Image (cartoon, rainbow, N blue to C red; front, side, top):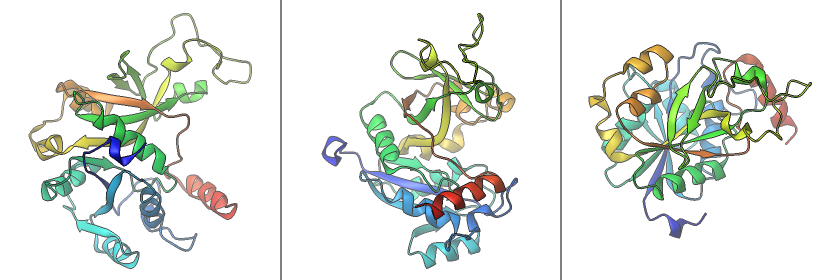
Amino acid sequence: MHASNTPLRAQIVIPARLASTRLAEKLLLAQTGKPLIAHTYQAAQRSRLASGVTLAVDHPRLALVAQQIGADWVMTDPLAASGTDRVAEVAIARPEVDIFVNVQGDEPEIAGESIDFLIELLARTPDATIATLATPIRRRKDLEDPACVKVVRSHAGMALYFSRSVIPYPRDGFPESESGQLDNSHSDLQSYLQHLGIYAYRRDFLVNLDQLAQSELERIEKLEQLRFLQAGHRIIVGVVPHATRGIDTREDYDAFLARQKNL
């Protein structure tokens, strides 16, 4: 992964919304000595291919954190429907950038290598509008969990569908060991992929995002990427060995604190 292999200019954008449902104002939690959003910003800076990182915030308290850590930041519409819409606001103002990477603000352990893999993936796939990542699902309970979004791909790595349901559904039963792990020796293991919520978009797509109406599939599954797929956009999906751990609950944050103490 060398910058010379990807002449397109890429920018990381971290949409940062103050309100959060399961863990109140989680991006401001600072029991490590710095706010969670600062951890994510600094992790994203480890990308070697991105030209910079921008925080797209929706509240003055997040703007203050951005200023304190010396981050590039913009104030976005507090009523924006999604993080993608915040990334689009940045894209409209940055015509010199070709690819925008959407890193969620609650991913403090995001790997710079994964971001670079995503940038290269989109750069070398000219017929794709969007790139995203997935990782093998190793436990049956994850496969059956609606909160674990699944994706299936074509032979070329293009997304065929995303779902909260089990896809593909194993008519003859699950390849599973007695421990509850999916059997890693099974030839179909690669078919069970968890979608990871990181995206790279071409600027033209983001600039025209407001013209893309919510689709029926998106309304049913509550998955924004289905709007793009149903509209005919091609999404290339790269596979990484493991997922980094996002922060959704207090238990997630406590586990993150424990990992930080062991560094």
